[in-house]
Image (cartoon, rainbow, N blue to C red; front, top):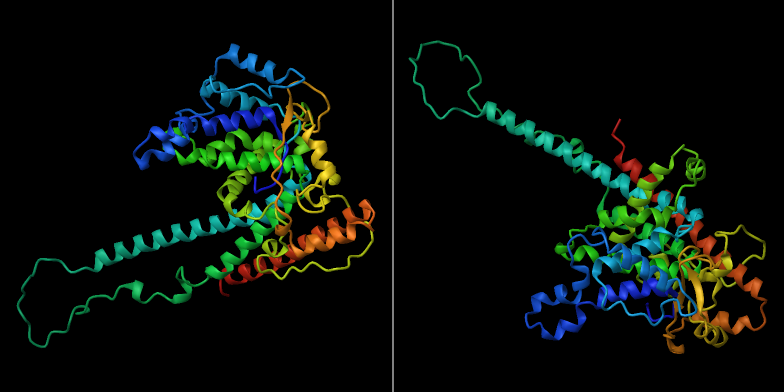
Length: 438
């Protein structure tokens, strides 16, 4: 992905690539260009995708094949398997993950800084739309009452008689409506909305990069796949349906018996059921914006993350210790010097890797349903490295690995603080504009 080398579980790679590939062999036989998408994604254009029950016996056999070493299904082809069996195999792997791919320490950050502002903005737009519909209905009703009848009545004119009523038609109240009370007044400007959206996308991209690199690669691979499912109407599977199927195991995890509400509870008293709904909303938000989030996700272009927010990477960083973002910072993207352009020693080591990810343990604790790792050496040429990467690589020879890691971590936290402050400022200005005039 993105021209870089990634580690993926064999079972996930086999299932996804087979669903991608199913119609590729018949693509040359298709003459009509309008059927291109349908044929290329034929494996993903099946009614009831991920909801049709598989052959239970064959499903268990496939699990055993991918759970048996030393190859763990590396040479197994799914070309002859049915689509329901492949979908069930992939879903079983995801459902049996012992912990979510999205780290629990980043859940609240993604929800509060990215998803919740968009949800509040959408609620505000819905309220304004409903208010506008109600106002228009009242105006139509009032106009209908004051509209003159089509019948013309004649009456005898009485001399010196005073007029009994207004001789003119009542002007529509919509023309007398104060501009400040209309829907055009207190709403936020399009510029504020775009600025807020850019900030949220930049924050979400940084939060993705704080994940351990194996988690990031797997989650990015699955998100790219899930965004393709709703493209075919035959699937009868929307983004919301995909989120209901996979949001909990990917972003929240499973509740432990007796302590589920305590573990997943927050200061506001949210239970696991509420958090599950939040996870679904979060996954929908991510999938709808995945094209923008994934743009530059694996690159070290700092200006791409800033999105015009004025974030600048300083040459010197303070050497004081700071708190860990995740439980395995040594595996995060920023612990690598050149963002997935691994050194030669690491590439040779990964070429000989047998097992890094496990279907029951993403950190390879040796439990059941294990899966090996597929690696593809797709390193970018040295000319694609930015000036910052070259500067850090030239200085890495005289730096201790721990010092280099702390430097990257402080840069990330500094950017997060700047983006958070900018987001708070935009939100305050938006609240001032949307507050009713006193």
